[in-house]
Length: 349
Image (tube, rainbow, N blue to C red):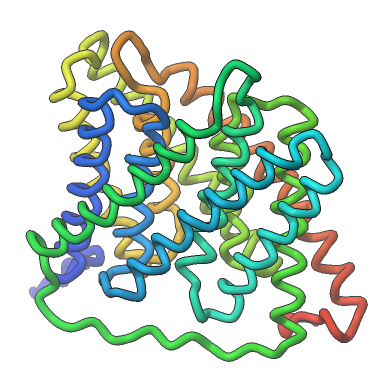
């Protein structure tokens, strides 16, 4: 009797090489940051994940968008914190305007990577810069972001040279949208992202960078019907990523001072979960949520004399609350904007 054994989905040759690129890029970024003792390790670990994970190919357009996103977010942070930090109303309006520009590029599809990376970078840098005291300066944050951007591009070029695709990938065609849908998506996402920034400032949630980043990442779907699923994926990815980070800390025990150990663990984890991310189509799903979760924890909280136990436990609870509240805001804005014909989304029932 012939038995048919069902197998799970497998990576093709291109997918395997992309997983190797993601694992190698984020691990090298993490290792260089720790060796140089640079601050804001989150940039050096997560930026390569974003650059190598969100786009499977590297081109001049991708590199230009990556640099433009970093420059735009740094410029906005310098202007807002340097000139208008004492004027909260104007600061909030400028933040809203900056998010409108970024989400417009995402919605139209002309420069999706610029909008996506700019949105995450702007949210994270605004969060960090808001808690700079009078004796400190915002410039180390801007310089670290610049170093991480340049290093991420160099690592991406290196990874594509070492692990090139075997076959050419088909170009992704962006679907056309009505102007009403574009207005809906821009206003909805910009409003929710700005509300997230305001809430985190008013409540003084300095240690909740992961939660604020999650509240922006779920907006990549751009509309209510997809945001619910994106929030669910993000919550599941965060739960798995936090538990993986806790397990990693148990394996490391008190040996995190020896850089080789966390580097090996980070490479293994990022390679394994890159596979799930790629098998899911390369979109920000559960696999990508797991990747960015332990990438943030490793980059920001793991170092000599530090562990990630408290950060991992706190991260899941804060991210869950942030996702629920963000989805509530998305739901309200979705129904409000659909009341008007000029901002009615094409998914309107």
